[in-house]
Length: 391
Image (cartoon, rainbow, N blue to C red):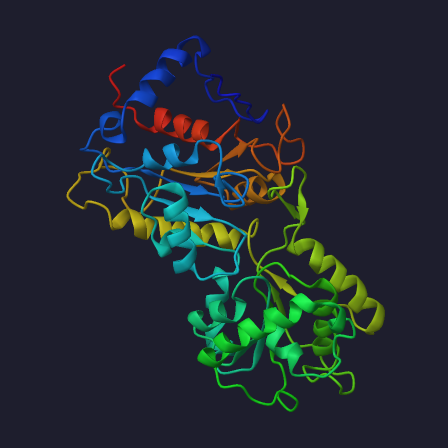
């Protein structure tokens, strides 16, 4: 097996002796983590995994991800290497996503290890806690926002259903009626249903990918161009927040699918044609450096929760800081660009199982390392970091 390693031209790191790789890989595959790294070591590194196109394709594990993740635990199943999932995907609560990932990948994953595109919306609770807001996207966007602490939130499905004929194509979308009916019952548990005609929408949040572009663009334009009161005159645009700005992503279909970034482009193009002022919005998610800083903070918290009785490998190293943080992703313009912008101590690893499929490194955003699969990425990390191996 070949690591398929490619490096940035500006890097001068020593290239491993490829003649030793077969025997080394054989040894790595045959040993558990507890055999690889001394139990007296506290890891001075952490890992951030993208999900779609790296560890999963839809709901199917790829790239040897279950085996790769199991190697970050000891023989008893206790976590030994701090890691998080750093994804732009979402639409469901972190607790629900952690449970799903645990079942698919065969390891115990905590909600605190799942950072989704909309996770930074938590930072806006103090501003909009009691304000009327609309949440857009697949899954359970209103439930997500309610769990974050937003008390007066309505999904765009519910919101649109309160206005007769706001979507002129609704009668041709028989599946929409079923969708709204299902969400109505859950909405009553989130907040009392009120007449929305006189309630000004104070902000709109694109939590996850829009399911019905035509309706959502129409309704969002109604909200944004009228100051939050559809059917009224043109008013000041309420704030608009996107969980991320991914133009494309890797799903089950062989070629990439259009993502939230494409929806944003469509909405912006239309809005700018019908409104005198250009659309204003804020986008979170990778490659925003804030997201990587937040991931670093959570990795530090996770590391501190590990066995505190383990002494430091190097006592000169402050345990609150990492020597290296690894970002493993499949999208050069999102995962790799984000790690590069975040700077030290981030090290970027690009896999060929998702958006990126090239033989060479990406020309625009070259990674520090290119491998075929996430399993090979973890092989590289453990081989590099577990310096106490007696090989």
